Amino acid sequence: MSFLRKQESSVSFLDSCLRGNDRGSPPCMSFPRKWESGFSFLDSRLCGNDTPHPAVPKVLPASPARGEASCFIRLKSSFFVFQGTCFSERILVSYAGFFLKSGFWGRFFDTYHWGGGTMCGPFCFRMVRWPAVGLVGRGRKDARGRRIGRGFTLVELLVVITIIGILISLLLPAVQSAREAARRTQCTNHLKQLGLAFHNHHAAYGFLPTAGGPDWSWHMTYINGQPAVAPKQHGGWGFQILPYIEQEALWLGAGKTDDLEKSIQAISTPISIMFCPSRRRPEVVVANCWYKYPNAGRSYGHAKNDYAAGSLNWSITFADGRTVSVTGGVGPVVYNNPDDTEGYTKYKGVIGWTEIRDGTSNTLLLSEKRMNLAKMGTMQANDNEGYTCGWNHDTLRYTDRVPQPDFYHESNYDDSFGSSHPGGLNVLLCDGSVRFVSYSVDLEQWKRLGHRQDALPLQLP
Image 1 (cartoon, one colour):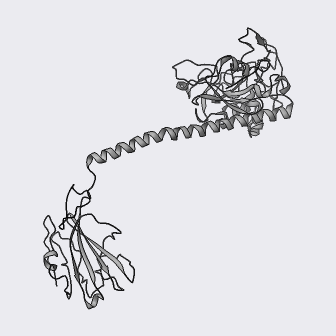
Image 2: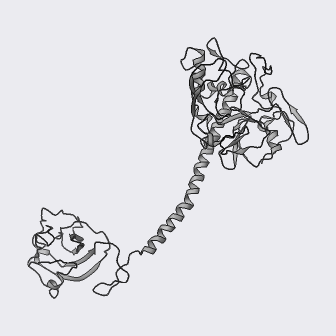
Image 3: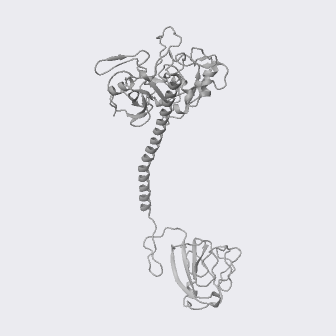
C-alpha cells in the first residue's frame, strides 16, 4: 500500500487513506522517495522491513518489552512527527530525525490502529503536524476541538524581560557589596602584615622604624654596601620594614653593586601589600630623578603606596585648650636627621613601645591616606616619591584633620587620612590590631588616636 503526497501550504494526507481502515492489516506501508520539494527522505517499509534506509539515521533505543518511537520528517515549512507505541520486542518504527521525549506542540490528527503478523501485536500510530514557528495563536483548536497550548504574546515577553531586568538591578548592588567586603578584608590583611613587620623590626633592633628624613630629597642610605638602620637611614619606614615583609633581597639591593642603583631598585619596585585593592592595583610611575642626594640624572620608576603612618604633626591642640608638642612628631613613627643637615631640625631620635604612653591599643600606627582619584597614575604632589621616601606626606599624614573619603579634583590634594571604602577607613593600631573607623568619627577622638602621649581617654565608635 503506497501513498502519494502533495504538499502545498497545509498538511492533509494519510487521514483520507487510513480512515475507515483502523482495524485493517495493511501488507506494507511505504513513502515515495522524492517529495515535491525535492527532498529525498524515506523509502522503506514500516511493516515487514525494519531495516532503515541508509540515508536516514536510526535513533530511538527503547525498551525491548515496550517502548515508544517517534520519527520526525521535515517537509518545506512544516514538521511531521510520527509517534508509535509497540507491544512487541522489536521497535519497527526506526526512522527519525529527532526523538521527542515528552509533549507535542501542534495539531493532532486521528489515531489509526491496525495489526499484523509481522508487527507481533497491536500498534498505535499518530501523526502530528509540528509548526515551523513554535508560537501558537491564541484560542486555536485541533480537529477534535481540543484547545492547543498557546505561546507568549509580545506583551507577556516584554513583561518577563522587565521583571528579569528588575531582578538584575536588585542583584548587582548585592554583588558589588560582596566584592567591596572582600576588598576591605584584603586591605585589613595588608595592614596586619605591615603591623607585624613593625613588631618584628622592634624585636630585632629594640626600636620602631622611623620616618627617615630630614625630607624626601635623599636616596636610601647604604654603609659599606649594607642598608643603614635608623637613626642613620634617610629612607622612610616603608624601606626599613622590607626584610620583614619577605623583601629582604630588595632591601639588600637585589644583586646591584652600586649604592645608587640599589636605591633606585628599591624605589621602583612595587610592593603589593602597600596598596589597597579598593583603590588601585600596584602602581609605578616613571619620572626624572628629582632627588638631590644624589641626583641620578635619569628617569626611573617610583612605586606608590596607599598607607601612611602617623603623624606629620609635631603638636596637636585639643578641645580643652591644651597643646601637646613632641619633638620628632606626635605619632609612633618619628622624624630623623641622620647627618644633622643644616636647615633641618637636628634630631636623631628613635622610640620603642615604652614611649607609646597612651597604650598601644589607643594609638594609631598606620592607616589609609586620602587621595585625589582624578590624579591616579600621575605624579600628584602627595603621591609621587613613593613608599620608600623619608619624612614626607607620601608616607605620613596629619592626625589633626578628620578622615574623609577619596575625592575627584583637577589639581587639589589633601594630606589627611581617608580611603576608597564606603563609610570609613581601616586603622592599624600599635598593638597590631586593625579597626574600621567611620568618617563620622569625632575630630577630638581622632586627634587623641593620633597622639601617643596626650594622656586623654579614647572612645571610638
